[in-house]
Amino acid sequence: MISDREAVGAGRLVRVRTWMAEQEVDAAYITLPVSIAYLTGFHANPHERLMALAVRLNSATLIVPAIERDRAVQVAGDFGVVGWRDGEDPYAVVRDALAGADKVAVEKDHLTLRSADGLQAMTGATAFADISAEIRALRRTKSPAELEKLRRAAEITDAVYEDIVGRIHIGQSELEVGAMITAAVNSHGATLAFDPSVQFGANSAEPHHHLSARELREGDYVLMDFGAAYDGYHADLTRVLVAGEPSAEQRETHRLVLAAHDAAIAAAHAGVTAGAVDAAARAVMEKAGRGEESYHRTGHGLGLEIHEDPSLDPGSPLVLEAGMVATVEPGLYRTGWGGVRIEDDIVIEAKGARVLTHSDRSLRSIR
Image 1 (cartoon, helix red, strand yellow):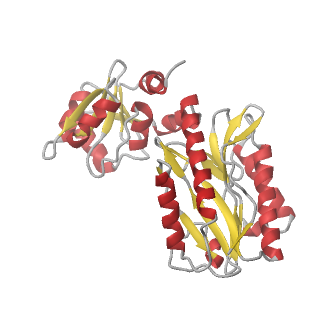
Image 2: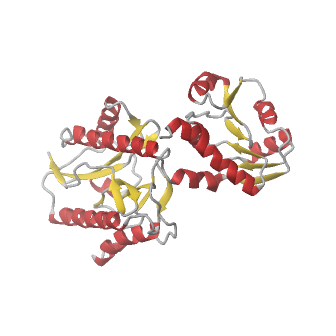
């Protein structure tokens, strides 16, 4: 069996080089940190400093700030690792790595015009191709090692939910519950996949709400959206509770969203389009006459990023393949009243979808 390190060090570069040969590209200059992590196994945020992976047909050079060099060698020792010190011109290292390259592939989604000008001035490259879509396509289908990391991230996320759900009570603030989530994730040996979202009452109608000092009151929805990251791979979970006894309307809204959620999962399998999965969830809400309360896609891809391909967009023609991983998270929102979103993580398989997150989806009542 090929190990994760072998897949990173060899198999993924083979596919990059195959694309380079097809496009008649002399070199690839990859600068997006998540792309570098995918191809080399080295995760880092260089902030304002230059970090890049220069790929030739017979060599690959990882260019990092000197403060990252030792760790880069430990993680990505199969690559040539070159560090540059503050005060030095990093493009001198780039020039050496890309010497003689006339046509260079770059990630146009990430490379700034200023950086492109510097690259051209230093290397003399006369043409640029865009490798962004190719790397995104490589990352869409997960290896067995990646799937195991995603499974573990989901398992930790489920455990965190069960850890905290019995500790939430009326009078706490969104900020306090957010801090509980962070501490629980860390206690399980993981880091946050993203800043947790905790939304009480009418705040639950804001899909991208920021934590506030709003305190939990009787009758409030409690919407929590959070996830753990394990070895660089992310989980994403949303659950909804009610403070006190749920009203009939709260119960019905939750029931309807859960039905849409389950319909989307039932529709997901290799060979179906991403748009068809979205349509399955949307049909349930529209049949109930509440389609206007649903205004976002049904889900997004998961992996080294919390949002990546595939995107379960309305009408998307993208055909799902076995090994793709995505969230399923339909929601209904009414300004001034509140909202419900139920989110789980799934792996696309040949004849269906395997759910990675398993924590209780019911509308629990808390005090």
